[in-house]
Amino acid sequence: MASRLTNEAIDTAPDLLPSTGRHRTMLFPRRRTTPRTARDFVAATLAEWGETSRLDDMRLCTSELVTNAVLHGVPVGRLVLVRVESLDAELRIEVHDSGENRPKRRVPEESAVDGRGLLIVAATADSWGVKERTGPGKCVWAAFNRITEPQGAIS
Image (cartoon, rainbow, N blue to C red):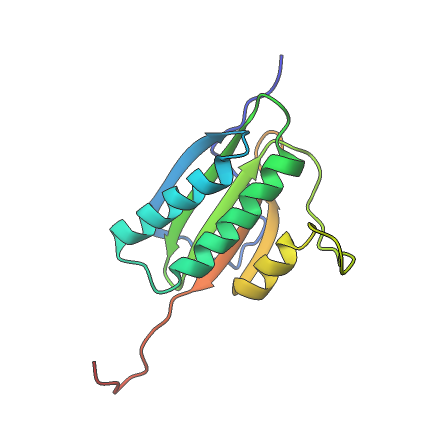
């Protein structure tokens, strides 16, 4: 019997702040259209929360992480879990899949049409990484520091 993707991840980075309350999770099928629908889910969630200062960056990273999950991480017939989380100092996008292979950043040939996803995530997000999950697979995440106005700034 095939194991199922669960909504649980083992936090292997104890220095991360605990959640302050807001998070939203959605499961997506393994399809070519999933990166677009996951981007829309993240954008709608962040807009609802009023967290739009890094919206374009978060949409881009969601697209790259979900594309990697669909192409390399999710076995046929399984799902991709996308989680948007609001922490004290940052916003996080997590992409969970049941594939066993850990993503690797690589330097593609100049003429290659793929292979730049994690380079884009590393250049766009403030931090990113991979953590283990309870059950099969892994969680690849990207974090975005909240943009705060300097003290004394006039609005």
